[in-house]
Image (cartoon, rainbow, N blue to C red; front, side, top):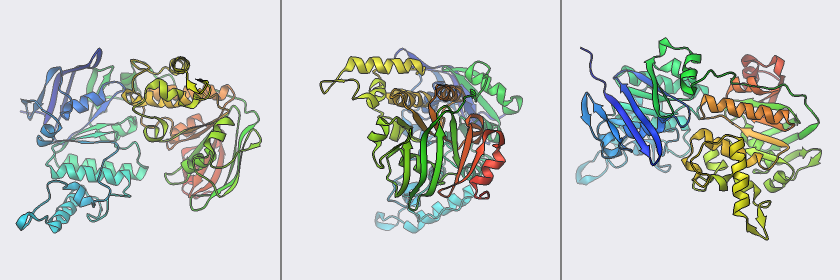
Length: 498
């Protein structure tokens, strides 16, 4: 007789006011299995995760632990039952060591209740050995990469005897080598009998790591099936409810005059002698490995960071360094990589976030015209098909894909001549990704010059008219669309092409 699942959900439903987030959803997580949870932003994945982790109580339905009904009266109850959630952005105490973070609040003690620091280090080292990673227990948490922070969180979960690990978009901010290491850790955990629930928008990762996949759409269960019975196209169809016509709908556009000219831009220790042009009507991709200096160049061009030498021109007119307001006035817009920290004010309304770039145009006699701001924001929310309950709701209530649309709306409302987008589709689902690509293609066709920074090679190859490749702060190649391949881009990104 087959063992019961470690954790199972039967017929879960959950509503928030009039919004039904989950409707009759069932799921089984078994020991030694990596199980994927797939679906677009807003499909109900986050609500299901929080219900399994004790954050939400279901309105109807049952949770089963080892086949027996269980009720979690909060996250602590789920944690005590052996359920741990590893979030995309870990929260560690930066001034404590790795080992101290793992055992915070429950350190081994010696006589007189003194902390046994040697035992803390020894037990942390044993956890890292169990995970098969080389991480020093005494290393400060401050300065750790996101990948290493996630490893620390996983070690913390193991120290609590976690039997179920829920990993929410763990690879969104990782490099290829970091993803490979994380997958090795997950496979190791799986072999040791842990049940893993893996959430990712990257379809290829689901096929590489998981044996089973459950798909949600609009809060309802679509299917739960073995991965081996699916193709990537079939899974995408399950997620979006339709055939995805084209993920990279690049419209042909005839490049016009130069809109953005960057000549010999240098910031000591960050990037050196960077020169390129972007013409009206074209999408130029900026590729390279993490740390190559791509985002830093974009921030310098926009004026967020000052540069030490070089020139930036918009339509042939010099742009002052270190002056974002002048860059905006010249027709430059920057959609940053980190939409939550740099692109949005999360507790402000959707309308206010979209209206932030138009404060001067919607003000009357120095006072905000709320009606004008609302009309402007509604217009752009409709154009970009942002899904929301009320335009006055906090932007933090939106899904990741809709938050990205709000950031785009905020900058498109300025009518930019040049649009710089940094990782425009990171962390959003395939359906929304296609919508963002379609929007960028349409903007280029309308004469906007687009500079697109992306770590997603298929995105660069599918959308760019030309590809600029950076390596260690320098541009190492400029590749036309007709010659751009994964091999040619990666060759230049690793410094093997002059």
